[in-house]
Image (cartoon, rainbow, N blue to C red; front, side, top):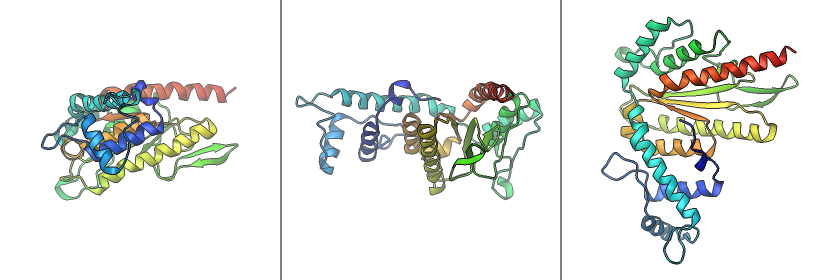
Length: 288
């Protein structure tokens, strides 16, 4: 899923209001497993409690301003895309394992297929990571790829480090130095609660996105940033508010694409082919 262009163009003040309203009014409908759309009344009530004005959201007649109309449109969009689409993309462990096994038998991959970090009966392949690795390998036509970077992502200038990111990522194409694309994978098939580790993962992606935004603004260097997430229980049953934050982050420009669950099967092949086209262009350009 990529950002809707209408909302991707919003200024930081828009996202400040989105965050404040979401926090104070709530992300989800209490007692129901759905994302909610705040009402004007709820916004006015909670802003008044905080000592904040709503003059930029509602005019003297009680009607939404242009800013307010855009806010309400975004909240409606966010709820609709999560309630009607994203929740249906998530797989559980059994479904992910089935897709992993099917592709493994079909593709006979040579790329790494790492195990998860569980022990005992829960020890198994990291299904989403394996799906990502296999689908990248199958669609880059023999080009190099770092499926498990053990060093920090670095962008160079004149053979010197120009920017080095604070965190390691889960994959880089074609390499961790001057990548065309990097990705992060958040799979939690064996979790039984939504813990701080999952929440921290969302904010780690935000940090990476802020660093990449600075790189693009200051140096004109674009690195595609993709986030893969899965496990229905973790993300939909327990983490719906964090899904809202991820949709916000996508539209703020801190991640270029979020691939939800089984979207990996249809969307990643297209992405990998795009990366390969850019790789071939750069190889040809550098050979001149």
